[in-house]
Structures are given as C-alpha cells and as structure tokens.
Image (tube, rainbow, N blue to C red):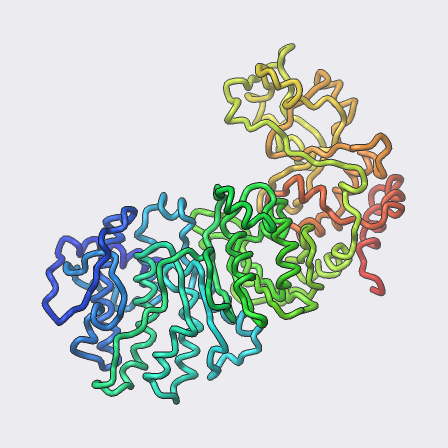
Length: 587
C-alpha cells in the first residue's frame, strides 16, 4: 500500500536521525534558510535531511555522477534546514516516487500544523486525473504535446499537482535540445506556497523529473537545474496570466482584514473560506483561453456562503467539467466530506460534463452550465440527470412559496447542565433528530435522559422556544440511510401534547410559513418532502449527508399553480404528480 510505504519512510527517517553522519565535502553549494521553520517537527526535519540521499539514488539511476549527486549543487534551491547531517537511507526510501517523497514531508508534520494551515497531500491518482481534465479542456493530446502556456499551482505544497504536466511536457520535448527544454521550464511551470520547507521539497521532486533530460546534455554544458517553485502568497499578485491553474487549495474559515474583505467583497457572503478565495483568484489570473482545475469540497456548489462566488464563477469562467470523488476519506486531512475535481474555462461553454470517480470513472450526465448564485443542481447518478435538468430550469423555490427554514437553536453540549429527564414548568420538551426518523414525530428513548431544557437564560423564551406548528426536517443523515430528506409535521395537536412548546436541537431544520395562506399547507409540505423525486432533487443539490436550511429553502419547484394542486394529493397520486413535474419537456 502506498500509504504504508510513506509511513514506513517517515519512521525510517526518524530512526536514522540518531545515526546521522556529517556529509563529506563534494563542493556543495547548499544554502540554508536563516532559521529552521518553527512548525517543523523532529520527524519533518529528519525527512528533509534524508531527501539528499534519495536524490543521489535518482541521479545515479540515470547515469549522473560527481557533483550532480549533490542536491545542493544540482538545484538552485535554498534548503530549509541544515543538511550537513544526513540520516542513512532506509529501504523504503529506495522505492519512493517523487509523489511519495512529498507525502512523507506532509505526513511528518504535526496534525495541529496540518489542520491550522489546511495542509493536505493530493493522492497521485487525483493529481493525474485533475491534469487529465485540464488537458481535455485545453484540447491537448495526452501524448507528445508541449505545454501551450504557463501552468501554475498557487498552493503547491510539495508539488504533486505539477508533476503530471511536467512529465508530459518533458516527454514531448524528447527530440528537442535538452538544455533548451530545461531552460524553458521556468516559463511553463510555477509553484507558489507559503511553506518554505514544502517549496524546497517541491523543487527537489520537480528537479528529479528533469534528471533524465539533464543526463542527455553534454557534461561541460550542464547547468544547475532551475527552481520552479517559490515561497509566496498564492492569493497575491500573480504576475503573468496563466494558461492553466491547478490547485488543491487550503480550506477553512479565515478572518480577513478590512482591506482584504473589500478586495474579495464580490465573492463573499458572510464568513470567508480559504478555498473559495483561491478559486476566485485562480479564475481571475487566467489568460483569455485559460483553464482552472481544482480539487475542492463540493460545498461551493450549494452553500449560502458561496452564493456570490458561484455567481462570479458563472460570469468569469463557467464550470465545464466536474468529477465527484466517491471516496470521501483520505483527500483532506481529518475531514470526511464530498470532494470534487472542478474545471472552469474562460471560453464560453454551454455544457458541464459530470462524471464520478471511484475504482473507475463513470459518466453521469452533461448538463447546462449553471451561472447563477443559486445552488447548482448537479446529479450524482445518471438516473437523476433528467430530474436535475428539469429542476435546474425552475425558478420557484420553497422560499418564494412563503416558507422559511432555520436551524434548530439548541447545541446540546453548550447547555448540557440545563438538560433533564423530567418535565417542569420552566422546562421545554427537546426534539432531537432521532425523534423524526421514519417521517413521524415520536420520542426516541435513547435521548430521554436529556429530554427537557431548563429555560434559564433571559433570551430562552425568544430563541429556544417553538410554540407554533412547523415542519421538522433532519439536518444530518447517516450515509447508510436511504433518504436525505426526512421530515415530520409538528402539528398544533402535537404541540398541545408537549405542554405547548418545544425546543429543537441543532441537527434539525425547522420549516415555517411566512404568510398566513401558504401555497402548500404544512401537512402537504411534509408529504411533498417525503416523495422520492424531491429526495433525488436534494441529492443533486447537496452530495453531503448534511442539509442546510439554505439548501432546504432553495429546493427548486415548478410554478406555484402546479404546486397548489398537490395539496389534495397523497400517496401514489402525489408521487406520480411530482415525478411528472420534474420530467424534462419533451421526455
């Protein structure tokens, strides 16, 4: 397993650190940063000090010798740590690929550092697939075609995403003058990252790809290999427009200064997420025929906080392709969520190609490019494509029909001292997500020890109490559940039986009418949300097991007069009517 090999390489580097020996003089021109980066663990430093020995193996394998075996002589890159002490090369290191060398560095960082900076390593399969998607958008052949312009990764880490295009370019350059081929790389490949150690690793692994080309240059004409990655801010001024931006950007909320918030105001709604800022910057840095390809969470396609970003992307560069990654684990560090490979093009495309990537790539559908700030309807299965196509053309939503969604206010672990098993005159009955399993309101016994909330805060009567009928919808569902939309009606009769008030826990959304005579009654709304068709629509909006109140409000619906007819339907009649409404015209 590649992961086991990487872990073994980290262990060998750490064990070898105690046996490190001073390097002999080979005329090395190693430059070392003024100070060791503070966040480097002992394991990360050991990994960095082992890389020069790995380099010698790679250089020797292509017939190079002498000073070219010295990493400090061969590459004009500044080392992040003192490399004069070198651990012995363990057996695992002999077989490491350039991608795995980068992975050993990331693996050796502390979990806190990886989490704080959103540092995560791109699996080689996804790196290759991302480049293949970008190449297809460029109209390039996968073999023997030179790069048509600059390929940039603004958050390059250890260089994994730049390896596939570099390899293909060097293969296509085989018949050219090798010295000119290497000299021209600085105009074609660029990596940027804030981590000096990662940048050094990136320069090493990228240079390792140049070794066969370097070996074809006459000895007396060889020059040190160029630096293709540099330390910098990938969100800063990018200089030369890029033909391709490839990225697996850092993610997570970030606090912006007033100046930064002004700069990104056109793509922000509420808080900022780093990966959204990188997506906006990437598109803006493209040339007139440019392509941006990103490995990112799918939350940008439907979340409220990304509504302005969606609109901006739609104006500047439509999404021409998206591949949903079936395995949610192992892409982002300590994160379990739906991930996609998304490609945006400056050229005006009319369709978005949708595929799914598991053990093999599966074609799902080709849908109209969506350019609005509303949630994008993108089917995850081929049999959902017709429903998604019909839904994406609809302009009515639950919100426009007079319904408002909100998230239950009770975060139980913040009020654990106020939760009781028995009712009291100053307590409110708590409704948990498990209480609406099966589509009917009931009392799940597993939660009975925390069944009532003591209304102790001055704001509780206003914030924590629900005393009017509503439709309750689970906000999160387990992956194994067959439905994503699970709703139950909280009727006046049910409220009366619960002392006239309830408190809704945070894993439940609350739907309430905003008008006295909504198009759909609460009973009919509950039945509608229980239909198979609506469940398939929401799966095409949110691939996550979480359903936000915003996504719930945004469910696209047919014209209100059609919806009004559903009030008197139930069971098979309602299922058939809803299915017919989401059937594409002419189908």
